[in-house]
Image (cartoon, rainbow, N blue to C red; front, side):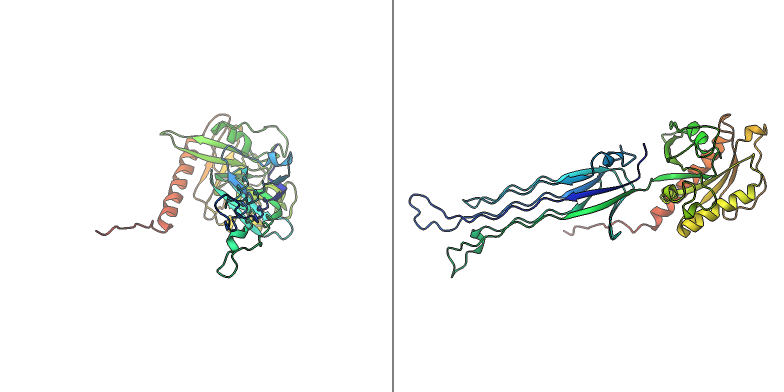
Length: 343
């Protein structure tokens, strides 16, 4: 089951209280205060895990409480800090406050960590309050409470190529042929009810990730059909591939409608590089590319996924475009800092 939005309750650990203690040992009649500090409460941390592709685990449990810190002790001993709680999430997860919608963090890479609820600080023991005029204080501090939050986790898939098209445009079939992914394929609309990711292998150990997005219909940006539920998953793709079935009655109108829905949802998304792919060309017995207007497209291709016709040309074009984008991103990135050690 694909789950891409969940609500969770988290509570960081409370800090331990400081101790009020005085040294009482033989030969030390005026030992003085020796109360130690309390330990820090545990944090709640989200960590990216590339082995995950959904937030399904959070539907089985929606509340986490971190361990509290131990109280301080005599002999100036500090209490043990509470253990942190690590919540593994798939890369592409955004964390927000549920009530206010305030952005907290975004997990983009495997192993990337962010603290979403900070543990309370431990209280000071009476040894901390010793001064020249107050040699035997009996003052100590309680530990601070940890942060308690109700958060919304939202997953936006990260892929290199996003397949966009109307229901039954052949997106799932194409993904199943060019990768090891096995999405559901059937001859009726909205077969795909959740996004699918597939890793496409090329020669020389080259790979890239393709996302099959559920069919987009007119009014999708307003929530019609599967609408906004899955449009957000193409926000993280680097290149869009608009798939048009060769058996469509009006290719131009279908392309214009798809691009309109994407533009209405996000102007930034509409500026991404895109190409047009005509599918199911086996129905004609040839790879036919109709003449339609696609301003700004870096290419127009015809394929037959079951017959594996035209796929090599399409995959090579995708790879070259991705390689070009990577070079542009590398050139735009700020230069790495180099520290020179002088003799």
